[in-house]
Image (cartoon, rainbow over the protein chains, first blue to last red):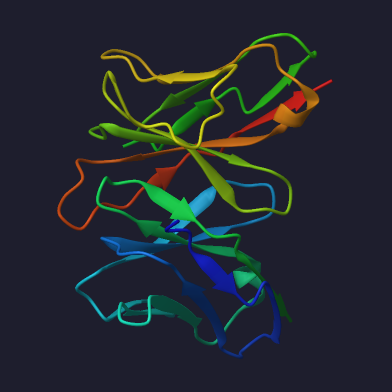
Amino acid sequence: SQQGEEDPQALSIQEGENATMNCSYKTSINNLQWYRQNSGRGLVHLILIRSNEREKHSGRLRVTLDTSKKSSSLLITASRAADTASYFCAVGGSQGNLIFGKGTKLSVKP
Amino acid sequence: NAGVMQNPRHLVRRRGQEARLRCSPMKGHSHVYWYRQLPEEGLKFMVYLQKENIIDESGMPKERFSAEFPKEGPSILRIQQVVRGDSAAYFCASSPQVGAYGAEAFFGQGTRLTVV
């Protein structure tokens, strides 16, 4: 299975701290995507990193991809209470399909 | 450009009834994906469609579930003879033509199905 597996399952930090979430997968991929989901809502696309890229930035987000270790990390810098949500990685295969992990639940305390 | 539109947002069905969930992809998107999410869990892939074609239905139960994406109109996920275990949030996503490295998928707000 190409399923992404996030680690940790839950993360609790103070506002202003950095949050790092990791994702591991099993087979070759075309891309890896990160999404955020607030409780009871739809998913918001955060960032896509291609298999030939190693790092990507978007605002306070930094994503890395290590295809040799089959892993990716999402770093949120200077976290805010509004960042509280579940974060999912999704691996994109050659057919264009996306397979999701179970997510990391991030809690940012004010 | 409107986002991915799903309707209804909430659907209540009695056991044995049929549930029809609709998804209109973003304008210009020809790829649609359906996912199911149980409370406190991740998204489970069900089916991936392009216009008039099912590309991958490996995540969809063989019985009672079907999906289509006709040439005109929204994609439909159909669940026949619903059971309590079908209660979940069903999300649809769409993406444009998939290039060599894939493409971003954008999600709708989901349909929350409750079977009573």
